[in-house]
Image (cartoon, rainbow, N blue to C red):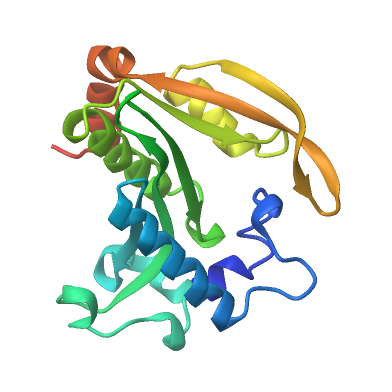
Length: 200
């Protein structure tokens, strides 16, 4: 994760999470992981690593160096693989039946369907297993790829804009909030994503 969090290209739309000057140290990443594990244990957070086997990467495997490839047997995966990002839910509120979705994906895999598949499984967990009513995606004006995905693929529009609430590169930026509801998931989105991603 340190590699991804310190990659300027991967983080270019997530600068409000970046540590631009000093970068993420190993200690920072370990502390971030501990905090996530604590929130996972409390049921307030659910994080997934996006891991892809070298065989499934095909020709894209050449974009990764040897140090990035983890050996078979690590984390129970029986083939060599690469951690290419994370996706998950935070601010899970089972009483109100909602949560926030987040994703970070290695820029080398953008536009390859990997992020869409990760979001599909995150939405499936949200609506089919946790039985949530609503999930929100919080993004910024500059994060055009995520906004396009939400508007064109998920067919949702901006629900709220909050002025100057995120700090990005030492200045405040607006937060754009999109929502997907269980009714949208059940009526069209689940079926369309399964077909588009060839998951069945």
